[in-house]
Image 1 (cartoon, rainbow, N blue to C red):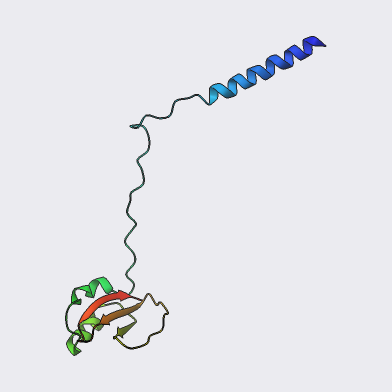
Image 2 (image 1 turned 90 degrees about the vertical axis):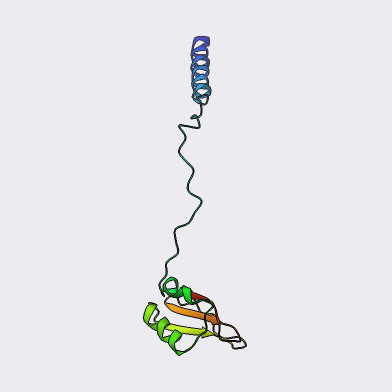
Length: 112
């Protein structure tokens, strides 16, 4: 019976040695390691065409500018956000949102 115990001990020792050796392999050298992922996210979609009309920021919102916004953007609707007015907080990606100040100067253009 002691022979059987010795065989079990020897088998257990071999299995333990194999596990320990398996954990000792070297890590890849820095040149062999895969490159890290890029630090940039893909450009967000522009479903309302805000990028196409973004150059109007800083200009006065008059009838000609409104027509230009309608013609150049892909917006299903255009919302002019004026100071002192209340607006819904819903976000509609296909809606062009034009924010103006007290002088009717365009301060920002975005989808939403």
